[in-house]
Figure (tube, rainbow, N blue to C red):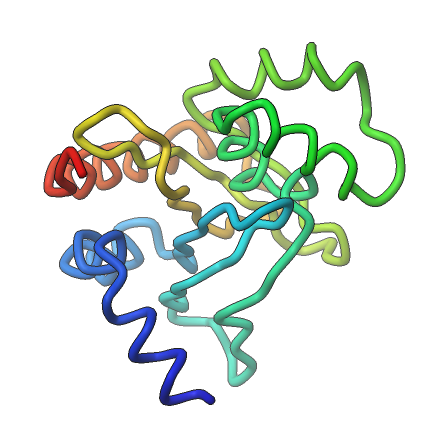
Length: 174
């Protein structure tokens, strides 16, 4: 199964477009970098490059309810109405506000910062990767410490955005 999943992931155009950038992005940010995609009502982390202090444990292909993560919020808010409603219905517990207002806020955000549901030591800074046709196809995220201030998160988001734009330009109009 692991070999089959690696073959499948190896054929994703998004991962091919991002692969040349991930190591240098990780080194510049000194943070773990993630690539996330929206699948139904969940965000699936399809690639991960650990920072230097990543430790021995890897959580490379985790799946989470979309609206519990910064990556998932960015992608779900830009999805079609049916997908958005699936994400809202699949969210564990109530949202922290009106779903329609949150969707508008998240859909216009250039980046989002969200805490991991089970972690107290890290937060996710995420940006959207769009293809040449302007569709949100993935999110690029970095794990930063909870003590990272707004300026630090904005700086990380700026690096993530540059990378997402460069890689997104290589994706065709399909």
